[in-house]
Length: 308
Image (cartoon, rainbow, N blue to C red):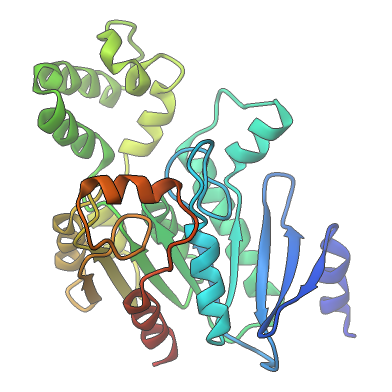
C-alpha cells in the first residue's frame, strides 16, 4: 500500500462493509459535517464514480426526510452500481445537526456547496476511480453544478430548477396563493438589498421568517442558467413529465443555457424519479412509499451518458 492510499485509509474513521451480490457497501466519514455511503461494484478495479447530491430540506443520503420515506436516492445508487458505476451519497449537513440536536442558525447555501466540493476533492484525490461525475437532484442540481466546475468529469442535473429560487417561489405563490404574490415580490426585493425584515404575512412565514431569510439570501444570489454555463465538461439534463415540483420548462432553460448538453425528458417520471401511471393522488402518495422502482429510462440515460 503506497503512502497516499494509506493516508486515505487512515482518514476513513468509520468504515462498515457489507456484501451484496453485485456490489460492496462502505459507510465513510468525509469530515465533521459529511457522512455518506459508497457503493462499489464487484470485480471492477477502477470504476467510474457518481456523487449523488440530495435536494432541498433536511434530506438524508437515501432521499428521505421526516415523514417522507421513499428511498429514491438509495434506489438510484443501487441501480447504477448494479450496472458497474460506483456511487457515493451523503446526508446533508443539516441532517447531522438535527440528529445531534445542534442546528447551526447561520447555515447557508454556500455551506452545501463547500460540502459538495469537499466530497468531490476527497474522491478525486484518492485515485481509485476512473472519472468522477456529480448527479444533483432538485436543489442539489444547483449545488452540484457549482461544485462540479472544480474538478468533476461530468455533471447530471435531475429535476433541477433553471431559474433563481426567488423567481421560482414567486411563480409557485402566484399559482397557489396569488393574493400573496405582491408580498413575495416585495420581500425578495428587500432580501436582494441584503436586509432582514419582520414585515411578512404569517402565511409566508415558512419562507420568510427571520431565521430563514439569511439562508434564502445566500441561495437566491445564484442563477442556475449562469452557473451551468461555467461548466467545461459534459452535461446531461433530465426531468420527468409527471414532476409537479419542477416542470420540464425548468430543464429547457438549462438546456438552452448550454446547447451542447444532452437532454432527456422522461415520460411519466415524477420528482422522486419513479414512473407514475395515475393521477396527482398516486403521485403525492408515492413520496412516502418505498416499494416503487426507479425509472428504468432514467437509469439507461445516466448509464449511456457516463459510459459513452
